Length: 129
Image 1 (cartoon, helix red, strand yellow):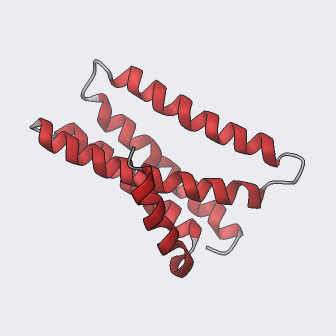
Image 2 (image 1 turned 120 degrees about the vertical axis):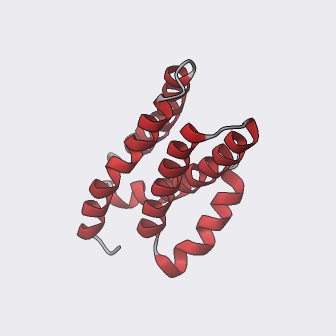
């Protein structure tokens, strides 16, 4: 729902700062705001935090769509794009089902993407970050 504004924001910032840096910032953005959703006291706070989480997550998708084909061989390119899109949808659906009855789980769900940041940074060192 909030992917369009963050996609435009992402596109304008990718040229001066680079796609990989914006990808890392976007991952941290949706991880931190997802974790902060644990501490929301009112529905309005929760709505604002989920909006900000959606902005971060919406900026991740355009970057991964661009970076995945650039890092794959031609034979595996379409398969990797399909896996990326499938993983995104399965992860968002599974996270929603798991968190439906457990508010404290938001803290762990927010911590998962944060754990991948060092891996992404390591992969960025191989190319120009």
